[in-house]
Length: 220
Image (cartoon, rainbow, N blue to C red):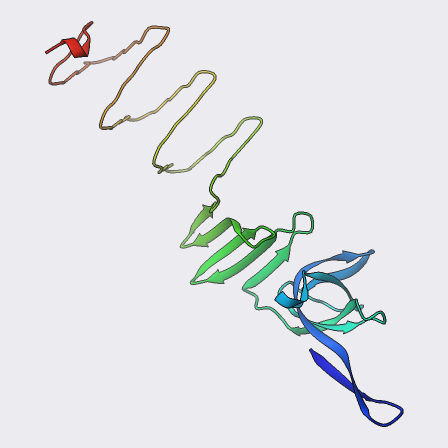
């Protein structure tokens, strides 16, 4: 806080709060006039809006110089005391209260979405020519009412502890090359219809024992 000292009628100096410095957390409008959302600090309540003086240009992350209005409760932004570095930006989303922030660290660009409590919900990182999408939440859902299509010019890789696919209709896999399936144990089952295996050339079946129309537990 900056104090302005003026003289009283008795000649004794009197101190009034004249200016304050705050951090710009968002840009918007108040009653149709340009305004900025400012944060004074942890001990001074939630962010509040301050109307901008005509011609003042302020960006998110700037340190804003504020002057009080006559009521002593509201403030007007009169200028930027210190501008934010170009590699760091933060925007407050007005409806949800979420914060969208971006920065460049260790030769990588980061874009993060935080909720109103500051918890990280989504992170987009661009590094070494790759784009990483991170969902640090406990559960995440990707939902689409219509068709959902995923395309990749080269490979698609998925890694997880477990995998489950539930379809109410049919499924079709078409591959121009070779399919390899590897697991410690495998089971194929057809519940209501036949199971067919067709091969244009030789069909090779290898196993220590091969059971045909026999129950595994009764064969020794």
